[in-house]
Image 1 (cartoon, rainbow over the protein chains, first blue to last red):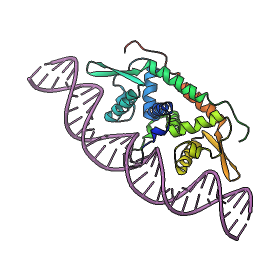
Image 2 (image 1 turned 90 degrees about the vertical axis):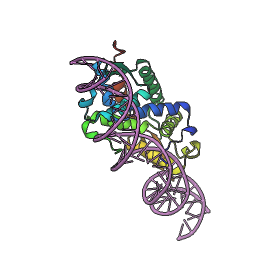
Image 3 (image 1 turned 45 degrees about the horizontal axis):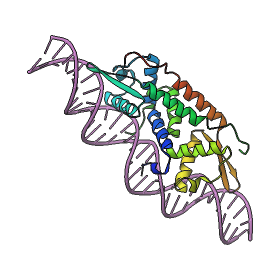
Length: 109
Length: 109
DNA sequence: TTAATTAATCGTAATATTGCAATATATAGA
DNA sequence: TCTATATATTGCAATATTACGATTAATTAA
């Protein structure tokens, strides 16, 4: 199949899974780190700095954008990308909310 | 292709991506939430509570176990699963370290 | 207008993931 | 031992993901 049965899960579970999936690739992590560390917009320097083809990076950027994690602005002939601040904050909250549900080790295992 | 070029990324980026991939499915999120909320071991009640076949759930449990996120103990005829406390803590640190690299909105976008 | 530059999209090949039925394995109890 | 119960594994079909070359679209500069 290869198709996830989203209908049997809550909206929240599906949303979190979608966000995590967008993050779950080393290239996309590398792209996001670069944007965060640079603390400025990244305009095209990604190609050549990561060892991936232009089409591949464009595809990863699209996925990050679809997930709402980054935003892009056309800057002349190139495009500037940076973290989407509000959504990044939401991601942090959503994720930490999920991780914090764990209340410490249990007795039985 | 469908194969990730792990060799061009850092060990850290690959590790984080692997962990996130293990989390990035609504069924696995649901399983983990159940374990966290129950705050006790889950022994087989998962099948039937989620709307997935036994084989499918077993597969998801295996993935979570491979990622080190849960641990299982044989309890007679059934198996008890719970969150792996140390690794869960590591995940929290790893993830929050990553998310905190973002230093707030930039001027250019 | 034309040429150069940059990024997006298309098409495709290779591989991975999801889900399940069927089967195998392992343990407890009769 | 035999049976029932619980979980793991196998094999398979459908779909998704990753990567890239080729092409297209959009903008700037000449």
